[in-house]
Image (cartoon, rainbow, N blue to C red; front, side, top):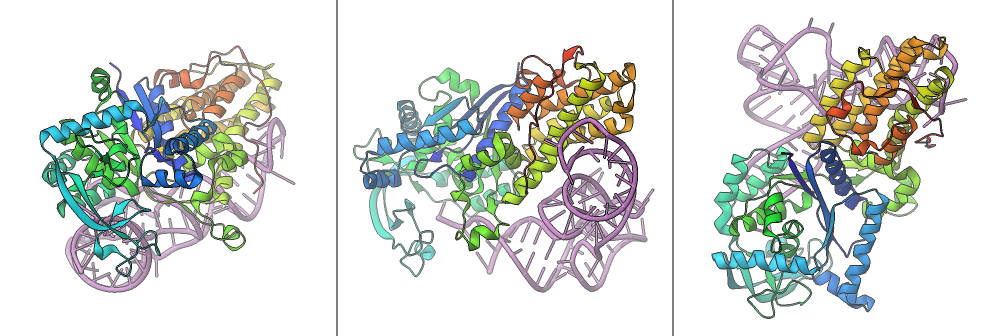
Length: 509
RNA sequence: GGCGGCGUAGCUCAGUUGGUUAGAGCACUCGGCUCAUAAUCGAGUUGUCCCCGGUUCGAGUCCGGGCGCCGCCA
């Protein structure tokens, strides 16, 4: 039976315009999903948009449209962005969909029935922009929001339903301690444990001050606070509340890819909610750092302080192509720590890895095959020196993806490209007389390109497909199966190899 | 204040349970090649592994202290 791999991105708040910070986890999740499809796993990749809450209601009002129209408009922008980045999601969930309302109400009703949701009152400083309560100690000068500095907070008193989170403190600690890999990287896991050991308060999960949300089924006039509605999307999409059998198929084989700013929601509140509803907590939560904007003095002095959130993915795609952007996000920032994003770095990485190494290898192989082999690709040798390298590369690449370390996986794959370039230099087939020796060397090179096309396809799907086609193979690399298809020696020979322009044209710095 | 993490070549980083001359990629220098996208291949240079002290036959790796940076504490 194949393994099941269910991967999610955060759902993005529709008040934001899609930016590179959204693209980062989305491309990672997409690449992971593509890798697991190669493995033949049953794979399900979910992304979507978070559409409720006060901020959406407010900005819709300012724009003179309904919240639903506002959500429709901005949700579509995320879909368009993901289309331009080659994101092959299996489902795009919107929290305003009826299926999601059903799931939210079903799940929270279950918790209510179990006795862990109770009515209580809450009074405290509240920032409208954050949609969050604060402690007095957190306020700036005792009156202003720490995030939206300069905005005074208001005091809000509400009769709310509270989730008895405090009852799950020990169970959460046990869960994390008994499942060492459940939150990665380890530093983030420790952070969560530290938070839990300080003790947990109950949390307010409903609001009466607005109507743009999922109605609380047992209490007229209440809607669920947007976060407790949003988290449930991961259950909605696989059938919770509407198709129990389907839900049982996928849950809890889930991998949540999240940013470090939403750890608490995903590593504390969400698993506690699931426990309260009698459901297993998530299998894995992978926490990535932030992309920071650095290295570009121009943008700061001439255009004012540039922010990452100002960079539209579509602009980068115009400059570097889909695969150029995807490759940068996956290769240049190790998963976990914060990483610097700069134009220079993207160009450097693009030119060295994509243009000079991969793209140029495909070009030179096609040309030599054209001149020395009559344009017909020969078969590789079983005992090629590259065969052993390829086996090591396959193993290291697989380990990298298994560890949710795309930069490690890609670095491993690129070793085969470098070794293939070296193999060509060692043999200099362009100096030989056409014949079996030339055929052997070029067959090896073609086979290496074939394997690289498969291994790199999760990161650079379009370029991998192009290389695949140029060396005469039918179908597409993403339809191959690892590990069988990456075993040395599958390139059949006798195929027409075509020469065309650069797959990745060099970019002038 | 409490808890935790980090500080290794110009840059980005790897460095298993302490063990031979500390590594990779990029950048740089020199040389080769000219099939290829001024690409590629080879060789090479650069490190007080933040500082001080300790444990040990031996420490980037363990312990203590210091300096610097960072994260979390609803």
